[in-house]
Image (tube, rainbow, N blue to C red; front, side, top):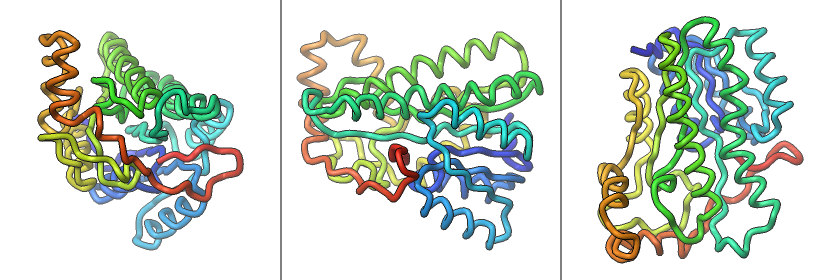
Length: 282
């Protein structure tokens, strides 16, 4: 079992949304040191100071996870000052809610660099230390969008499909080492954090309350859970996609459950004040 108590925890995108709640939740469960990476300098400073004033040991670092050189440098600083984290939450992510042909090349690059390459870069920076120590837990926040197609989020879905496949493959590789190394992959539907403001909840798929999904994530970590799908109907998606012909799946699930129209009125959260040149992570 993974113990959050007395653990060194690192959360990317930890200055807002579920990243912030996971960070706070780990401290409430007894983590000895919290390290937050985020590129929203103002929010990062506010969150870190509030936690420090509450008596917690918390460190904030402005890091662009899409910049591999910056990730490597920041990781070495963390390892040198605090040691290799026991638990890593790969949470930073961005979304662009529009049709594919409306995307700019920069929006495509930014989404893949943050959501996919950034997740891999952060894990790669700390994984050798975890393997050498013989213990560690990596939590990768993917999405239910990694389980089915959805109009107006094609690039986001692509990035999360990649994370899901990579995360599960990484888990198998680490299990082959027969050490205390774990990977938990999280595939939630829409979460009410503002990141998906304007979306319409599909039929039987309520928009998740941040506090509830965060509790589920932290519970899954402590139980060494492999995959966390939420809400419950997300468990059916792989089965339905495997059993139903594609056109029937489109008709019943995609259009019947209003999944394919859920992003029609997407607005998203306003871009934050970020480190110059860095993409928004949340």
